[in-house]
Length: 80
Image 1 (cartoon, rainbow, N blue to C red):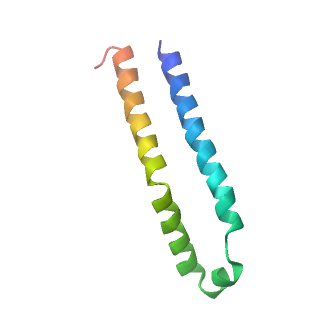
Image 2 (cartoon, rainbow, N blue to C red):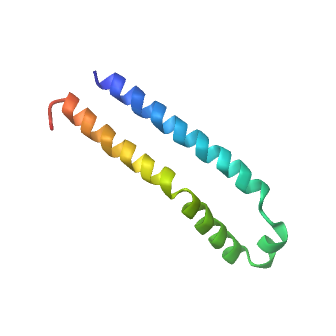
């Protein structure tokens, strides 16, 4: 049933969201206000890059979950 497939998908995404939310809280605690004030653009660019690089696995997992979800839904509705 499509509803079960969607609920499973949402549960998987919730797990990833919790991991990211926890990491964001940790990241916010580490912000160096002095460096941020010196050069906000450069500091935030570097911080964003570090954040992305440390979350490549989670982002790839989210992509995989989404692709698998699409396949399951298409199979369920008979289009694959």
